[in-house]
Image (tube, rainbow, N blue to C red; front, side):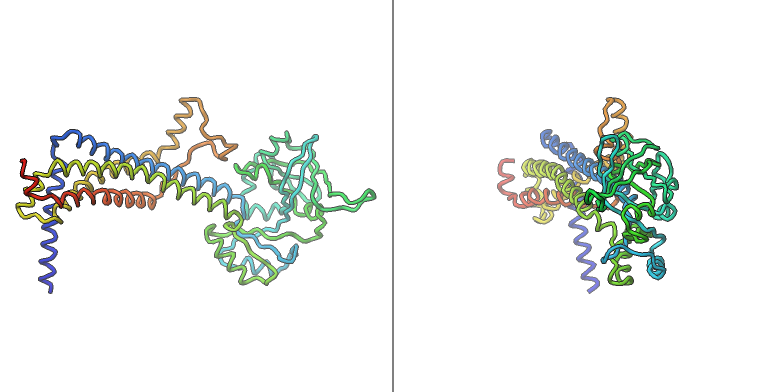
Length: 427
């Protein structure tokens, strides 16, 4: 049995060794037909170009994905705990249950409502959030995002407010200005029911680099409770966790530990459509750019078909010397794969080099041409990010190799059907 297996492997190596030798010799030899050589060169360059473009584009998309996610997740709490029956009250047992949950490192209460701000005849929409400055700095990086003032400038009873840089620029607001905040909490007055209005003093301006700069406004938790007549209650807790990507697991664990009147939400539930759209965009771009490699593989097929026609006499001689149809097929598969592998190797090398330096290259082009390709007002960043992920390179190589293999099958099959008598008749 062992001897039979050894003989089988020995014969297989001999068959593949012959096909590999002839195929590589065809690849290295100077062809008499310069047109076939030109087509082979074009197919090699096409595969290299396709692989390079695919690696670079996916790296740039990974960079955008990473930058946008990091900016969003800097402000979005990983896990939020809210009450299903309305506002919450501070409870020692509830706080201990949350903080003792594995993975939770800090928590901070918040009050949140929609509202409007008025300043010098201008109106603007805001998402008003009441926070405890001391606790909020433990769960959110907002303190490091302040460009004017400080998070600690929010003090209960002073009715101070922090607004985003985009909203401040849009309405011409600076630190020290007094603005009117209107919230959808009805107050009964002698003239009827009216929304609650309160004048606030701008204590600071923050800049996160995302849409929060145009929509969010922060006030002290006690002031928010007074404005909304919540007494000592609040809307929920924002939690900080050790691992951002374990937030869904932690939220599910909290739902099992907390009473039924409480519900935990993780960051993936707050922006599901956005993150799905980013993933779908990357997938569709991958499929579209694969067509570049497919076109190059078609050129490879064309060059191999012409090569088979050009080598009919040599194929016939090999057949008369005893070469089987499988050997002839393997010869041209090897030749096609050699061409494809050369293109793939060049493409991977160029793609990696370009991906690692695309940020500097684009910055240099912007400086040279005096043009800003990306506007921070639209894309939230003013540079081209790049993030090279090894698994993407492996997928691209696998797909490119698969297309090259498929491209060699028909020419190899055509070569195996050459009849020695007919091929040598006119030689």
